[in-house]
Image (tube, rainbow, N blue to C red; front, side, top):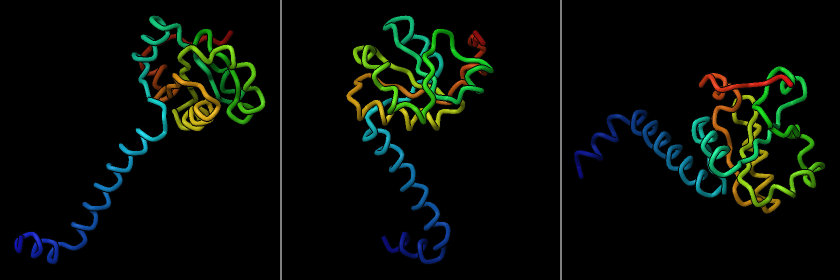
Length: 141
């Protein structure tokens, strides 16, 4: 034990940095469990769509959506999600995969959907960019 204390004294900055990184990793695991929704990659999302008839909800802005979106996705910009929640009520019993450009805005939308009582909510990690990088189809229709 004395060796550890001596190491900590001699390498205070390194030890502090290690403790901060360890704390951040632990926080990310705890936060992922507490937020109530899971993240899925494009391959897992495709499986949910094919096996469980999952719905894709695209929460990007109109111009982003027009540039290309996942086939058959519903489009409700994240800023209008609370106002248009009634449109999603009929999908409460289905898995909903929420997508945006990179996965940040969709995380906010997932939290909103969970608060509204949606049970099977998934965040498309990496968003439409990850979908495109996996060479999966996008449409402009």
